[in-house]
Image (cartoon, rainbow, N blue to C red; front, side, top):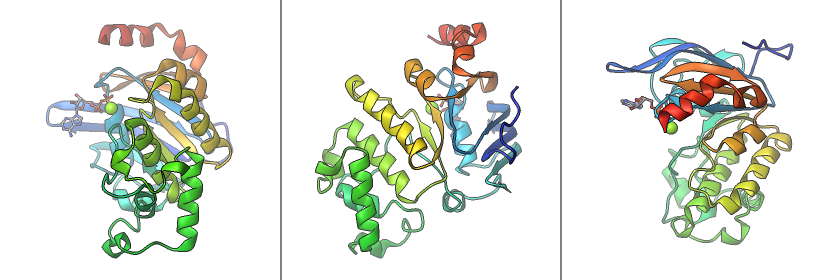
Length: 254
Ligand code: ADP
Ligand code: MG
């Protein structure tokens, strides 16, 4: 297992986390870390516990054992909204957008502190927020759709919108759950480029669950692989690509 590179603690640390659902151990004694400013991958066959780990990290459900640290604080018992305010957010395998609202409206209500304020649904948002929403829609390539209903977008465009919504609150770190799933193969390179720019230009640290091996091998500088709820392997992409345990886990699953 690698050691931290930087002087300071990693931005995200998962320490010996176990999560059970009744008799199912979805995550068993998982430890991993993500240093500030990096892109790290999380792979593993279906049902290996990747999404469960994301849910544990953002406080969507309580963990049974272990600790989770973010930006110098133990967040293991924090609620999702508290964690979001600290600058850690996730996106979903399935999108969570409001189809009957326009792209800009979705952007304006996406900030965690806004979610609960219904009156914001009926107010146009501050000028600064609107300008930021338009900039981010431009960043993800949805500028021309900004006044369209989100429900009229293709699935891939909805995922881009959801990604832009997550950027609205200026997170320090994003957890992306299969960002390329369901996206037209011709659009994947553009998305990968945007994820890189999100990291390099906006300085956002990324932990990415991804099934597309070509994508994750290109994007991540370090990769963790889960199988059956346990950490199976960890290493740089070239090591993971040739790891017989990883290859067997995927072959066994398909
Ligand atoms: P992955 O994202 O790697 O495909 P998941 O984390 O979704 O895997 O699932 C890991 C295991 O945990 C599976 O066996 C799944 O059925 C189980 N699981 C996930 N969420 C729940 C839940 N809310 N209730 C019960 N079992 C769950
Ligand atoms: Mg999943």
